[in-house]
Structure formats: C-alpha cells, structure tokens
Amino acid sequence: MTDTTFQTGEEFAAAMDARDPLAHFRAHFCIPKTKSGDDGIYLCGHSLGLQPKSVSSCLDEQLQNWAELAVEGHFHGKTPWIRFHRLLASQTAVLVGAEPAEVVVMNSLTVNLHLMMASFYRPTKQRHKILVESGAFPSDQYAVKSQIRFHGFEPALSLLELAPRAGESSVRDEDVETLIDREGDSIALILLGGVNYATGQVFGMEGITKAGRRKGCVVGFDLAHAAGNVPLRLHDWGPDFAAWCNYKYLNGGPGCVAGCFVHQRHARAWDLPRLAGWWGHDEETRFQMGPDFHPMVGAEGWQLSNPPILALAALRASMEIFSEAGLERLRSKSLSLTGYMEFLLDQHSSPKYSIITPREPERRGAQLSIRLLGAGRELCDQLAAQGVTGDWREPDIFRVAPVPLYNSHQDVYRFVQRFLAAL
Ligand SMILES: Cc1ncc(COP(=O)(O)O)c(C=O)c1O
Image (tube, rainbow, N blue to C red):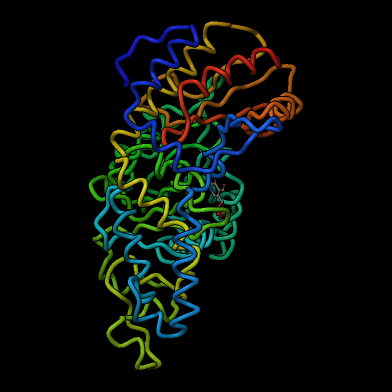
C-alpha cells in the first residue's frame, strides 16, 4: 500500500480501504462509539490500544480453568499456567526480532527498566554516565536519576542528555553517534527510546548500538512506542537489553504486563548482579525450595514472581491477531496511513500548526505529533466531543496515531477534516 500517490478527495480513502488486505481486522476490535452511536475515530493506540473482542473469551477460559482446576491449573488444562508466559514470549520474540529465550513477559515497563539497570548499569569513577534523550518520558528520567543516585553519583554530572539541534525537533542520528564517539569513554549506559514518545521519531537503533558497543558502553532501549509499531531486529542489532509496555500498539489492556529483552550473549552471565526472585530460578529445581538462587538461562532468569495469568491471557488475544496479520503487512499499511495523514495536513499549510515528527517514513512509526500554535488542550477536548481521540502533551503537542490493525484511510480523512474545522 506504500507506493500509492495520495489524492485529496474522500473517494480516494474509500478506494484505499476497499483494497486493504488487513481491513477485516478492524472488526476484531471494540471501537469506541460516539454519542450518536457511530464508530469514533480512535487515533490513540500510541497511548492505549483498543480491546480485541477475543479478550473476554481468553479471560473466560482462564477463569474457567481457575474455577474448575484451581491449583491444578498450573499443570493441567489446555494451557498450563506454569508455561503460559512462554507462549507469549515466542510470539513477542517475532515482533521484536529476538530469539524466544531472549524475551520474557513480566512486571511493568519501569520495573523492568530498573531490573535491567540493576544488572547492566555498573558505574565506575571513569565511566558513570547514562545517555538519554532530552525530554525522555518522565518515568525514564526518574528511573535513571534514581539509579545514578543509588550508586552514589549525581545526576548533574552523570546524566547526559541528547537534544536536537537549535531550531530542530528531532535528534539527528549522526549527532547521537558523534556524541557517543566523543563522550563514550565516560558513558556506562546508553538508554534511549526506540521511538521518542513526544515527537514520534524512530532512533537509528542499529547504528547507535554499534557506536555504543564500539566504545564499550552498555546499550538499552525503551521500546514502549516501538514494539508492535516499527520493525525491530533486536537480536541482530545487539543491544544488551530492552524493555517495553504491552498496552499501546500491542493492545494488552491498561497496565498490562510488560516485555523485556536480554541479548543472548548474557544468557549465561551468572556473574552479573541481579535482583532475584523465585520465578527467575532454574525451573528444574525451583520447587525444591532451596536457599540458593540459580537463575534460568536467558531473559527468564530475570523474572521475580509467578506471572499474572489473567493479564497474560488478555495479551494473548492481541498476540494471536498480530501473528495472523504479520508485522510486515502491518508496517506497509502503517506507512500508507501515516503518509496519507501527513499529505492531507500538508494540503492546508497554516501557521497554526506544524508536524514535528520526521518527514522520512523510515524515521517514524504510526504517530504524527502536531505542534499547535495558539490552540491548546481545548482543541483536543473539542475533537473528543466529536468522537475523535488523540492526546495532548504539554506544552503544545497533539499526538495522533493511525494504527494499521484497526484504523482506516477514512478515519484519517475524517480526522483531518475535523481537525482543520476545529482549528
Ligand atoms: C516511553 C515510555 N516509557 C515509560 C513509560 C512508563 O510505563 P509504565 O507506567 O508502564 O512503567 C511510558 C508510559 O506511557 C512511556 O511511554
């Protein structure tokens, strides 16, 4: 769907939807309704993905197992709970380009970032800095600053922030690599978002990983806005770790259990310090209840607790849909939807708004971030009253993401009409 020349009329959107091979997936999701009972225009999958209709039967299945099997559900039934997380890990591994043993589904995103930093942020007097993007998601900023202090260092000296050039909205990949080359000897950890939450910029994760590793830095990514959105090849690119949430593009439900990647080269790194819990212990001997911790091989060795099966069951509903749709086809439709939105917005150049997301399709995912001048949150509220859901990020950014699993070109067309009218 990507080599199309876009056109301005609504009939173009209808024609694109008519030949969309993924169009039927929309019917698998609960689309919020407007007051008049029509489908709303939901462009907020970058914040909370929609509910797959199959979630309730997936949950019901586990509730029934719990009711009928009780504790035996750990070992019996169609999907024994003891291995349930592994079903998800192998589906997730495909999405992030990893080996199944490199991925685990556990905890929540910020918790996983802390667990990863407990193992991989090992500051010394010479090498103590953490490199983050300036204006990183607040939770990441709090997490890295608290880790720096936890190790007895000061954020003022140990936090290195990467800002766009003056007058630019996104960071140039070559500037990241230049900074790493220049400062790398003092950087212990590079921790960047795969996709920046505010601008929608995709970082050049492969090049950054190479540059970081060349200088001996640990490299990790927060993939909250990347997983299920853009193609990832974590195993080949080779970062040390990554973590992401599953409630955005991955539709696992509010506060859903998160994902974590640890590269294979650390699979048997028994000497790495880690915060341990019994579910990370070797499963062969876990129930011998011994006092000494022997971690599982791979990412599972970082688990703490037995997994929340109901949350995993909800996520499984979405993972099944992803497996069927295939990330390659989704990316192709995503490029079309987002490119079409950009095209329509560009038809009406106005001093009242500008797109701050990179213009190059390979440097962005589904999201467009629109900077508003003179209008603010009230515009977002006005659109919401008309059934259009995007979100507002202070001080001046309106974020919208047409998501290929459930959005259509007509959604995009109608959004742009309403946005311009509201302006
Ligand atoms: C980029 C990024 N990092 C971290 C978080 C925090 O996630 P959680 O509350 O699941 O820990 C979010 C939440 O939206 C996010 O967008």
